[in-house]
Image (cartoon, rainbow, N blue to C red; front, side, top):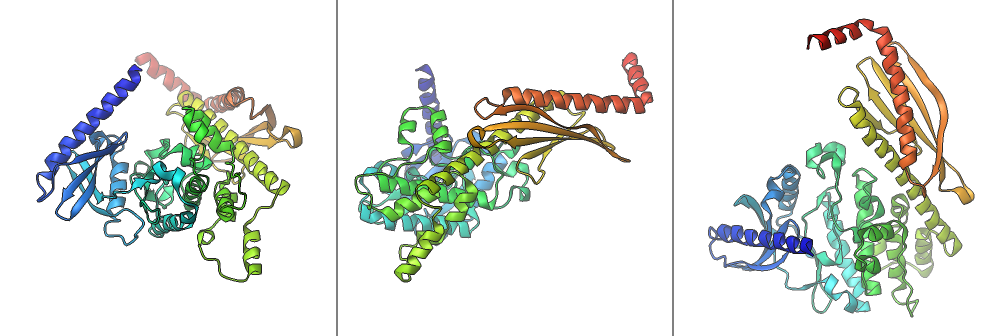
Length: 476
């Protein structure tokens, strides 16, 4: 209870500070009235302000958000929003000005008097679903055409008119460019290599929620499909996706649902909005590669042209099968995702264990191998000595398809030669259910044995270096 009180108090303080800074800023603008509070989040507050051209919405960021350790990344997002000033997309919120003053940033936007879709989801008329979906897709594809991904598409960030005929996508606060991560410096991305989660778990795809894939156009397009599909689910079923898990107040239940649970589209009328139920289900496919292969933006067109036969062929081409075949595809996709997630978590655990052991003396790199079931660690002793430590995963089938045998291969590389420290050998067996802790400890121990061998070889080849080290230590 005390934690909640402190949280509310901190939020109230942030809102009061934002209003004061905004009031000081508005004194320098002719014809701008005092701000009226609308809403707030963890890092900003939103106000309504009367201006010479009518009402505007002004978003005020908390100062530490734009001046803290991640200031460069946040200012890059502000610059991205600035690039949308004067855009011509009627279903995307208008941005009029972005100003940095009063030790913070102000985003002046279109004021939309409509309520959020989140507050009206239970009353969306069936006949309005196609029109609202078309308008949402228009906004999302417009951003794509500008090389931008919204990343937080959800009913809360969509406002609809009272008659459910018009829609606006709002809140570009976490938008970013489609550009590959390699094309950006580390501090211009999501807080560098840490890559913390941004956006809402309930409406995020599995690969994005668990941050298992590096930023790429495929990742962002797959996220767009998933989030639009989740909003479509809510409009069709008149309830939020994963509602029970969210209401339970346990974020791990929500995360597990995103990873493993396929939303149900069953209701008393199977034919009601059947086309949109099918489209939403495809968008919510767990596996990114499968999702991208069975969904594209042409599927969202309201008018399908052609003969009934051509239409049927187009639909069947997008279908992954029916009944048992479809269930098997979903199960296979989940199994593949679970295996990849396990492998990546284990190797990341090993890396985190080895970093404090090796310190700055032996830098560690985790590099791709071109194989989905092999991971390569490189330990750099010097320009002339390097240990390559490969961890391979051999998954079993049938009833034991979540069980895996882990094998390792260690190779030393010098200027003159390459030789195995140890032949490839099976190190241990485990399963997804058992977790990664014991297996990762065994991998770490095996890596330490191989590193000890390298150190022994280097010291035997350069005994003078040992004597110099001991002499230096004695002089200290």
